[in-house]
Image (cartoon, rainbow over all chains, first blue to last red; front, side, top):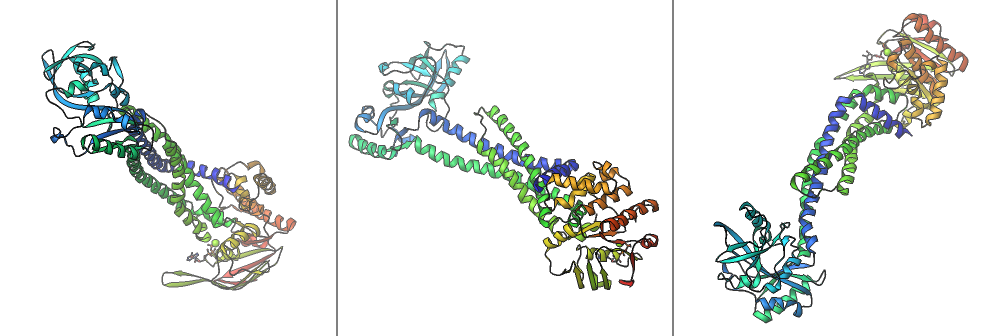
Length: 394
Length: 222
Ligand SMILES: Nc1ncnc2c1ncn2[C@@H]1O[C@H](COP(=O)(O)OP(=O)(O)OP(=O)(O)O)[C@@H](O)[C@H]1O
Ligand SMILES: [Mg+2]
């Protein structure tokens, strides 16, 4: 009952000191707004980073020859047939997609450009979810054929050379001429997708392995039979390649990577939240300042209320309600501002925008908590004032 | 109603201790209308604040309603001010943002009385001081005399056993002051409310049943 009365009077008194309330409000709006924006952006970035795995499926993994660095790639390599036989021999692996990268010069109509290339199998497209804009992908029937699929940036490059429909065109890569059979759309770049998908061209793996550069086959993508089997899969692959070629392999599963990324991103979000919190503290100090001024300005009022029988608790509650309302209203507006700011950030960076429920609840809850925390001291001061001293200043 | 015995009150101002009340004795019965006279600075307000539980004496014995006033907690003091005492001040001391009615109801608010009941009682006392037609006005929209009527209504609202008025006519002209005094007299006559009025004006004091004079921190003439 007295609380309802307090709410009404608080609004009246905050309204009465519009200018001052507004300044404190701005502080809180900025504080809550930045916490909301920071945390939401953090979550959106996290979501963005993990999205590609979600699309590819978290049951995929990358298997690499261990102890290989790019400088010594000629020394060690895996055998293509051994890789293709993995699903037969390792019960945890469903399909495999070996790929091999190389580098040379792309020539079209006399214009040259350095370009990476990836030798792939038909399965590669499915494994790494490569969408096509035109034509078709490399097929397993294209053995040794001089066919290529253009990555998005090379398709753009060709467009700059005046070729808008590249399927069927002939290009020269290294010493050989290739026929363009398809064009891939850009895929989100990340740790799992080889960057050549966007930046280079894709050729049949058998063609690349026979090229004069003799690139080493040292990696393949694999899809496991389900989740939670990566440790088992790793063991099976170790044994298998140890048996076939005395080679050691290392496995990186999307599952583990996502978990690791989740942890990192949570830290990142926390960090952003902490940065936002600093401005929130500044906003809170603003509220405290306003409340302190309000208390000292209203000593007389406090005295009068005490004279008619208000207890210390009544006075404390009154000022606490006032500061909570102030920061709560700031919090609500800040929520809107924060969401708006996030939407703008997302718009300009092409991220998928969403409103984080946690951030919203956090923002509103935190703003009320700020009101209590920073309002407590001024309210306590008001309550502790001696009635007679307070009344004398009326 | 209350009894004061050898009440002292001293203020420490820096290194100096200034004694304002130097042994006040007073005995006020239920239903009395007492005027306290005295020159400015002799300690009348100080005494009234002690009687009204707003301030504590440095030493001496104060018995209110048969109970000693020592060792009460802050909440108990607030409770007594709320239920037993009504204050009327020279400067009215109304809250400027509240309407007349809201000001009047304030003691009941802190007693936890529901809003409907509060307003009902508030209107009742506002009619007693002829201010019912101004219930929605704010103090700033009222004349001094009208504000003092509202303040009296506020003092009455909680049905206290004692009303303490510190120079209630001090800020008003003689005619208005007399009207205010009429209200006190009729409250005392008709409803038997115990009232203590502090005043400079001997003309007003004469109208009270009893008057005492303070001088230099003591009560001199009973
Ligand atoms: N908080 C205080 N600290 C120090 N001295 C005080 C304090 N309050 C009052 N005094 C002093 O006590 C003396 C008596 O004050 P008080 O207000 O009781 O006088 P009064 O009789 O009501 O005078 P008036 O008729 O002018 O209202 C004054 O000299 C005043 O300066
Ligand atoms: Mg005085």
